[in-house]
Image (cartoon, rainbow, N blue to C red):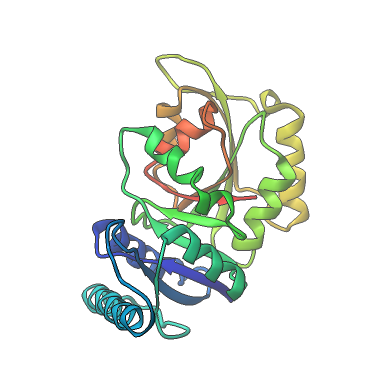
Length: 264
């Protein structure tokens, strides 16, 4: 079972993340832990000693009530592996500490799509994601599908993509497709022959076969990121290595309706 930490807040993104995680559990058995961080206001004066402990107890209690409300509302069909964990402090710091000390396999949180792709880039380049000790699943949509896609391109490290993806998905009941993206600003998305993917595509295919998960479909797509996003929307998730800001692959992931698994 994958030891998984799910971050929730009292918002729509977390609602989707809860339901998506319960769906994911049908394909990948999860040892699920839930967490929430209560962040102090910048101008909040809490003192020291018993005054601070009393304040922290109150804030922690509020956080536990939040989690309880979310779990009651969503009624997810996925048992928790332990009591929900509420921390008081700064979100990135507290989550990184818990992930490292708890030796988790996967971190999950919700994200609502936005036309501002810089917002997505700021998320994945945040201190939390930059220092993440495990893969992260950014849930965007409750896509009911039995298929996953590995997103490759000329600049992608094939071994990093395949090995990282299969550490999370290798024991799942999902089927896999390989999507090789080549950028061209055109009016229509084109599907090319496999040979157009070159050596990197062949390396990725060979590694997937070594892992015992040869893709059912291989697509070499030539077009704009928005066109590739439309192609990917039917997948349960899209797995990718971390993109750079100027990467066209970053635009694909930022605008994709499918949830995104980021591996290292």
